Image (cartoon, rainbow, N blue to C red; front, top):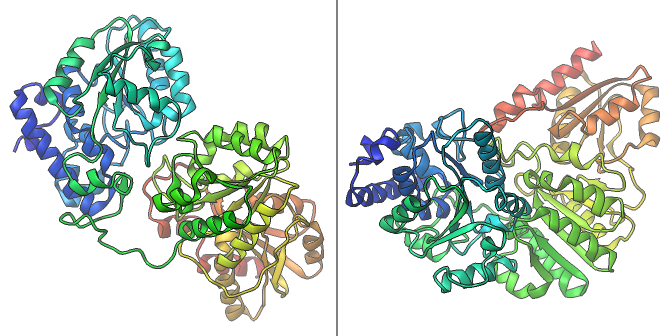
Length: 585
């Protein structure tokens, strides 16, 4: 096998084209074996194998700098830069992350997990090189789906006038996570159909030189193109047409499902673990599609991740123009939602917690200053969401909860979630975000209010004394468990509160607690700094009330075990009970 003899790019350079084709096949086989057992990004990596081999054959990493956009297509790059064992040996699968990481290798320029960033980062590297008089090549690798993000345009626009070596490899596989959306993709199609010769050329219009490679999975064609642009004194785009999921029939056939996946049966492509029951994404898609049938003003919006809100291809077809995918453009999604709401529509934007940080300015300026009643459904918020350091879901509470005019709600179960979501869509007074419960679907069987317009009114679900536990959203159940443990150990029955509103303080509820309570505990499934608990602690600051705030510490935790992270932050029912009892003693 060739792959076992590749310890760095210098070993790739010794191979013939035929040997590199064999190497590419070995890489693809190793990728499929690991991904089928371990999960990860499937289609993006299978489609980039030949291009990655060619890049390392022609360029001289790490002297030449290669920046991968999102970097979820960097698995082959890792295999060629000294990390092959993490793909060949199952015992070492977890030694590398799913994204580039400079702590792993000098061949990785940045830790990157979000989209549309590579060209801007490469522009910075090129500027720094020119300032110090260097001569290395700087290469940005970006997918066609990432071009829909605003930062990609900003980077290309800047690159077009830099007048220096900057090579942008556009990997065009005609897909984002799902299908591409936006007027830009009409031009990419015309360029593909004309072999790169169409007079209308997005990249040339921005001042970049341009080279098209129609066979983007052909090693000889790729090597010739990269040799042609190596050491160019001009900003240049190399537009390569590749096949997403290449070499694995199920991934070629169902490119959306195989963008990323959990472990699957390699022979059939079917998941090794069948989905267990319903999830909140599926339930949300069903709810919104039904709501569309009753309200012609309702519009569901996604920024490149339709599955987050349960809109399968079939549901997208049924919704028609009432479902809008803006591409990977969270900023536009928020401003679009604000405009629809201002015009009398009912927009609902579904987004992963990790991605909402990409649009803080639009949330503040375009939406909340104007107080337009758009609705945001925030998914995977909390410790149980994605656990790569680039995709953490526990920063949304401080981000959203401190923007004026925004109402951020934290339901505790299925019934409360849909009661809140239904109200958010009907009301016309505020922009409203709903933090979709994370983890398995909790069905309480309880009946909840359907109107939440009287803001910042917490719900007391159990009246006790001495100790009050405020269990926010996902952590309400943790509060229940801790309360039971405290009562069993001490005979003290804690007061249990469902705060519901992340964005405000219920002074009318907090004030009376001072008469017969000594300790207030806040539990939130998010970072403590700037979070919900600090609001409660600040309110009680001038009083004698003891306030214990429990959440996660501010850090870029990477590939953590959720149970270990909770225990490290004293977020188990046993630890919470211990801390409370110590204060009572």
